[in-house]
Length: 267
Ligand code: ADP
Image (cartoon, rainbow, N blue to C red):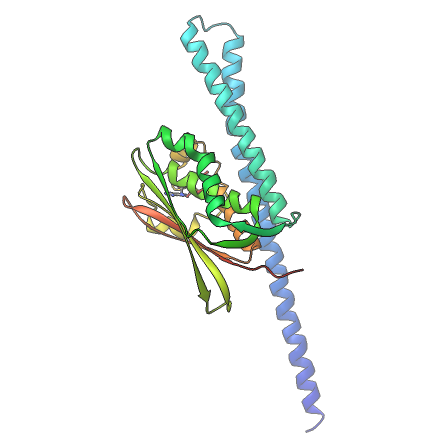
């Protein structure tokens, strides 16, 4: 009957409405779970260096350490852990600012080669210390519309990781080339940062952009890592409407690929 038709539709609509409602609730639960997981991780990450500072300071204060070299080595640990706390707090604040979209990107034309030269300058000392060569292979005339400070932050993170996870005498290569993106239907630049370092196991590849995810906790700690670098990088890339991916082979090296639109939409 004709009366039956609207009834069915009405029924269907409310049925869909219910489904959407359930989906929203499960999204909220998932976000809630992610948030509490993050808080638990943050507490754990902060407590470790604080415990080290307290423990070594207490031992020194108790006056039991008579040997000067031992005392100095304890002070060095306190100093390093203090630095580590500082980096962690900086990264956590930065990440929460970026995630809650409380940052305003300041777009302007950036000369890509100059940008990479400044990235190279910032990391020159660390690279030289490990005898790692940074090679920049970028066309002279390339420009991109971006937030220059955030763009620099993206590549400082990627190149610094390359240095951390590459043995002495290694090499980092930075490249950039223009291409037409079929999917986004715009002109983009494909950046790549390659190292010939330790590589990343296949099973870890999908997870390395997660907050606090590290393949090897001990190694990340000893290189001064916070485990937040790549998640910050991914957010910054996505804020620029770009994508990031990684290719890696254990013992051969890793390549991080960042693709960004050359022009940003005016708000
Ligand atoms: P971290 O502070 O530990 O370096 P990141 O978020 O920058 O944290 O990176 C997450 C993890 O991804 C690292 O702990 C490391 O295991 C892996 N990783 C990142 N970059 C590289 C690289 N170039 N080569 C090998 N492993 C890498």
